[in-house]
Amino acid sequence: MEDIYFRRKIDCQLKEWFNDKGHSPAVIYGIRQCGKSESIKHFAKNNYKYVNHVDFWKTPNAISAFETSLDVNAIVKSLSALFPSFKFVPHETVLILDEVQDCPKARLALKFFKEDGRFDVIASGSYIGLNIDTNGVAKPSGSEDLFEMKTMDFEEFLWALGYDDSQINNLLGYFRKKIEVPKAIHDQMKQLFNEYVCVGGYPEAVLKFIQTNSYFESFKKVKSLIIDIKGDPSKRLNAEKKPLYTATEVARIQKVFDLIASFIVEDNHRFVMSKISGNSYQRDDAVTYLLNSSVAFKANNVQIPSLPLGVRKIEGDFKLFYADIGIMVNVLGYDTIQGILNDKLGMNKGYLYEAIVADSLYKANIPLYYFGKDSGLEVDLVISYKSEATLIETKTKTGNTKSSKTIMKKPDHYGKTKLIKIGDYNVSEEGDIITIPHYLVFALGKQL
Image 1 (spheres, rainbow, N blue to C red):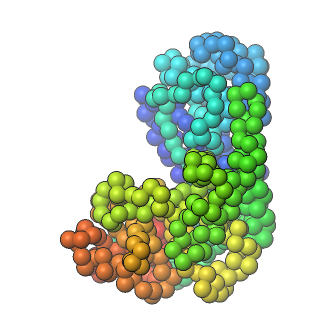
Image 2 (cartoon, helix red, strand yellow):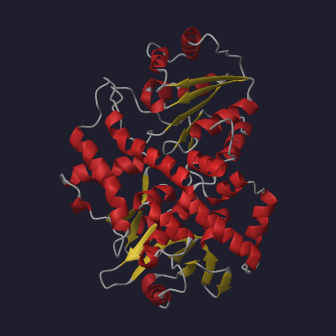
């Protein structure tokens, strides 16, 4: 990205990992192009004297270094032969393994690097969650510290624009005290959040926007990333270098990707599996591919909106969302950007802003659910917040919260719940109801 580095939240996580003297090799996973490699290389450059970088996609011959032996000395010897510039100095060297899922034995070797202790290893991959054929190689267990990385959230977007911690902490102070954000700041943040929604959180798209101040240029960048995402299943190979998925399976995965936007704009936003071809197992596999490759995330319906939400979820009843709001806006078309900026989305605004709120909560690492009954009682999203079941209403303005109020009035039936209204509001709190603007949703993850 032209030597411009955007500060990311993984930076702090990696620093904490580095300072933990008993750390295992790190494995960072997440959707393609979310910035994993850039963050790892930036961190390595600032914390190690010697940085050895292997990308199993760009240099597949590096796989041979892990084929004959998992002994660290043997691996170091093989890598040094393949890459003469590599230097392995104990306690001063980091080995970076990009797209590690393409070399199952390299990931298995992390256990032996942990036991050896002389060299740090940071591995990354976009498809670590996939059930890829490893040709008999045992799956790794333990001996690695896992980190999930997502595309940029609104706070990281503010960092990219030049906002510092003191300015953001000042903003967070209004949320913590539950007092109104001053109008000048409030209006500015609303405008910046709209920009963020239009651009999305892919670092390349954000960079393009900052460099050109053009939504169309960032839109084109996201479009190209979507083409890559949809084409990736056809590029995946098994251990024998044959296609991992048949043409039919690839088409089914791509169909699920396209249907996500279609169902978000439906009245209840639920994903209907019957719209996918194939039997139930094939449909599940297509959805699971997008979930495990971090392209999408889901919110399951729950039997009742009461803790613990995880054990109350209904497996076959869920909403699917793209893992970056920029994808959603791009799929809907460039006119959506104009609608967001000019506040002229009309009837489409409600469904889009539910996706926007879901995106912000997902990037805040808050597990998402929703509550819906055939009777019409439905709440957009449900989360656990400060150890309490919390209903989330994503009204763009002062919308109807009848369902939430019905649930809150019947704690004996639905359990005790609180409500957070997210929309075109300022900050306020009244009893068990908190109201916040869209740009402060990321703050909910700060208090978990």
